Image (cartoon, rainbow, N blue to C red; front, side, top):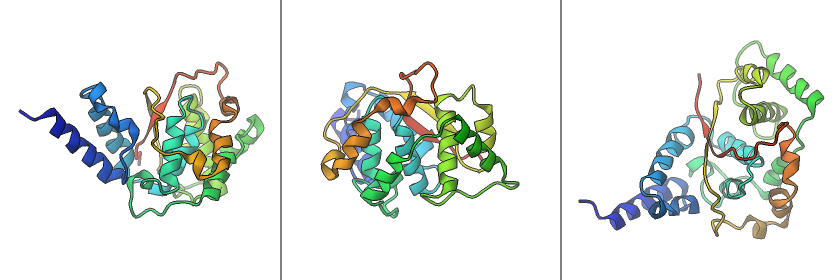
Length: 225
């Protein structure tokens, strides 16, 4: 019979070997035996093992985490993106600068008119487009369309059709409790993060007519081509 302490130590070593750090989220295994291991299997299949480019995955996670009521999600993924761990579990993916991440967090959300332009640009591609380069208009457009799918996946058929112009992403989500802890204090890394991460959460909910804040925390990226 496997010793529970040995099994937990082996689990934590596996997680750390993939991320370069042991995120607090996966330190709660003893509180829910079996559950965290299942979530880890999901994270590997839908996030770590997805063949999407690592930087694209991590930037998308940071962007979508703006819509999480639970702040752990954005704190942890910002940490990965700036090198506090490995972006999308990839030790070869170079971290982004603090200014690059702040620029991502500060990017305004589109209103209805701007969103129509996003869809028009994505739909204008006659052939499937490549995964866009970080910080480009093409990345912004794809992130905006994916945001709509993430928040209102049933009601936004046009966003789904526009995203189909890339071989990229299917959004899924599962619930989880908040685990802020001392994983990474990005506010201490740079004061600008505190404003963006802990500031006006309401600005992130312009797409939601009923503000359904009970959604989200672990987001999966599944290759759909």
